[in-house]
Length: 428
Image (cartoon, rainbow, N blue to C red; front, top):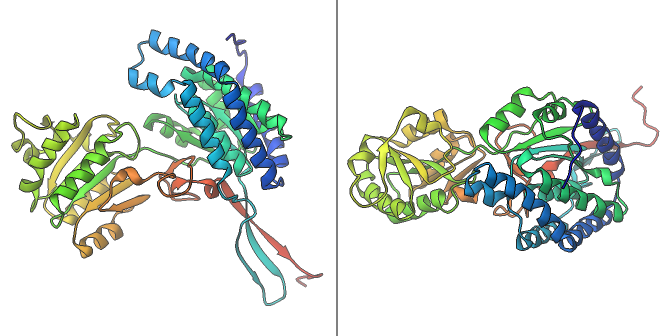
């Protein structure tokens, strides 16, 4: 697949954003039936043009392998006919979700007779900056269209051929369904300059959502003049309380760490109360070892290390703040629940924390003191997920506090406006 070189990113990115703004104005008043029809057309087009998509993806895979990209990253980049079919199925699932646009959040008749309603409306133009995974291209576009937003997609250069092919399919399907094709656009350019221009398109782009590693998110948050919803870095903790059932705690820990370590809701640190440390740590090491996990442990965890079970290496100060996204976990023994909370407050990214305890007062104290997007009680951190929460899908997991916090479903892709109806009212 040949691509013309980009000679200047600013006019192209700016014009792309301007077209998206115009498309957003057309989308906003459309009924649900029109948006759902476009999504169904997208699902059908993905299936019918699978060969085209997979061929483009093969270009990216070849370049990734030639560059020595780790197999785990190559796997996330890969599209097969089966994966394309699954993506199309996910789009159909989005069609079935409730429409947030136009929902009345509150309403009343004021003493002066004015009728007041607060209703959900689309954000407008949503920019998504993300790494690798071309399935995000379709997921983000589907969620934005369902919620009445135009979307600007800026994936990583490693998936440029795949994303180009996917967006071509999406645009054709959207246009065929009678919606403006510019409701879905790929931000042109493969250099960082195009990302910088997108981050400075204030007034044309209403919000940016970065999805990826800590470095990407930090760069967008710190350098963007467009409002940003910060997502996803997950230094998640599991605290095993003095009143924990050891077997339950081990099962939760292994699931939280090892069921899928490369995602943001996997556990990166385990803290165990000293009262149950001698009972818990040997069993935890055996189970973590069987799952292939390496423990970065404090002195107490190191004392329990043996020939069998997980490898234990000395923990450093850096380990407490690390999002490993691998088969590694930091581990410490704490003297109290409050000490665990203090540790979490110091090192958390604000994503998800869990407590395992049979003591209701302990769980109440933990949930009241820990300030993260989600707090799990006797459950794995892996449940922090839009699908698991029953939202149907998510655009990301917000770790900030303004506008949206936690898994972001369709309602989080909307804002609100007030509609005030009078009968010749004047303030006088």
